[in-house]
Amino acid sequence: MDSQYKIIHPVKYLQDHLAQDIRPDGRQFLSFRPISVNISSITHADSSAIFKIGNTTVVCGIKAELAAPKAESPECGYIVPNIELPPLCSPKFRPGPPSDQAQVITKLIENVLRNSAAIDLKDLCVYKGKLVWVLYCDLVCINYDGSIIDACIGALTATLSTLTLPETLYNIETGRVSVNSTKRIRFLVKALPVSITFAIFNDQLLVADPTDDEESLCLGRLTIVMNEEKICCIHKPGGIPISQDLFSKSLSKCKKRAELIRSLIDAAISTIKQETSK
Image: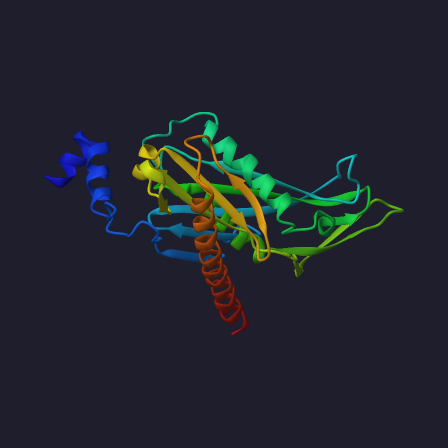
């Protein structure tokens, strides 16, 4: 009966729960869903990770390729993120070209990588003006249930943290490239950006880590991306304005949550290192 009521009157169903200071999944307003991180799951990628927030699941794989640098930045490599939201993950998506939401998230991730100083593109240079690494970062959502930006950035951060590149030498005289696949060098990640999403309802009610149903019925959303020291990005796609008090509250919760996520990623990386060293 409860599920039928939710389907017939989704707005009333959510409002009835919020009026009783509880959410449909039993969480408090500022409670988060559990997180799991799995590292190096895809054997054919240079690095990979599966990041899960509640039911929302994103798989990330990075493939590194050699290429000529861009003319405007001869000593820098580059990163090409690509987000996929296929029909597999939710009935709200259709086959075909990338949806508007996927394109927005892709652009947002590019901004986060640039503003967070998580990586130095000069570290991807093999020989200035001649040869650099290009990192193709494919992120595929296999289950969509809200907070998709948080899952994508979490998966990408975890994947970058385990990336290794083969030792590569470029002979300027002959133009020959030699790649030593057996000797791999760890790619340096200088910061771990973490994303936290909130939903805003009537009377400036703040809800942390919203599900898909909560996101579709809320009056506004706010995503804060932080590295260890500062805010990297604030994403608020329209909706009602947020008060200063509410923003301060969301920022405080964001800092604590970000520390937890970084510790989970570090723990997953440590586990992989212990397994490979045996």
